[in-house]
Length: 86
Image (spheres, rainbow, N blue to C red):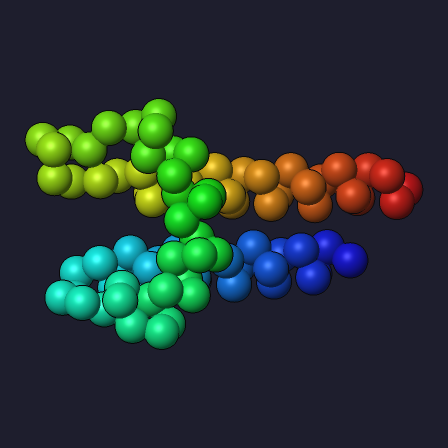
């Protein structure tokens, strides 16, 4: 069970990274893949964007914090499942 959760967390991590990288390319977020990634990733990232303002108005570090939080949440869920299965 924890292997599935770890895999889902890893896939979502790659989706966030891809979405952030698409922001560096002009009009990439308007593509089909960019729109799908936006619908899947933006609700999660928006939570962190409300809490963490952009540095200097341009540098958005909220995806980094979101990735760290995702890792902690995933590890926490896996630890809880290990505890419950015992």
